[in-house]
Image (cartoon, rainbow, N blue to C red):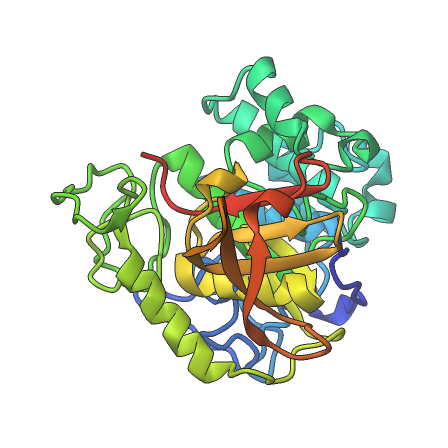
Length: 396
């Protein structure tokens, strides 16, 4: 897995991350959070709720560091609003948030568990596994429904670096209920620092899971996730099952009926072919970070970008190569390459032998984008350790 980009803590910005609320009816804008970025929706939602704000000069600094104290205050703002509002200010700017977090047991199993460490640890960047531990503690405190050991242990098998995780139960649990995803290629990177953009994603996720509410929608009139969506009749060309339109934002589903058709996916791919024509540059330094697929550079970054442009924030599921469909992501670990399927219908007959090929769009094909690479189905790695196909179509 490609680890997330490191960043420098700017202590002078620590207060600005956590300044008071923007009205939920407004849509905050930041010069460095454009609508084509993967984190746009979550940053906007978190800012609408008043959990986060900019760092000055109209910027949000999505790749900036989040400290232990900042994340404590963020979780307190999201889950314990009345507590944080009534908490008296302490000697430090972060004292109130840490007091609330400590009172609800959020620091258990982290470097902030002992108050004697607060002065030394509060201002340091929080690692991803400690972030997961605080989220897990918040789930326990809120008495949220948690998966069984067997359920989250099965999910943990898909995390390539799970043996490097000290907070195993917390990370696996958050994976199992889809509060967290890895940074690409099946890795979690437990010791990497958490970014401001990631903080917005997990805040929206945990708030939604605990409360059942889709928070801070860009459209204030969007219904709650707890409401039962109206399910229209399945179109004849729809792929997969029906998804909850109040919980997921799927660009391909332009009429927002909760169904994804092949024609809709083809329309997105056609536009991407215009935006990234054959031979357009996409090489070793090109990068994309997806809230579902994770972070990737080179070919993986391009594939994750294409996948997000089609499926938005729908979750991924590993499927066999025989179930490959247009828009699915193919991660060939044996060949160290990631691509997106754009056609599954090409069959070649030679004498009595008939073989089926699929075609892909590939980034970083000699530093550029290439449409129409042909692959044989029967050449795909048989072992999931060597290759995996990820589908983001809703399960039927």
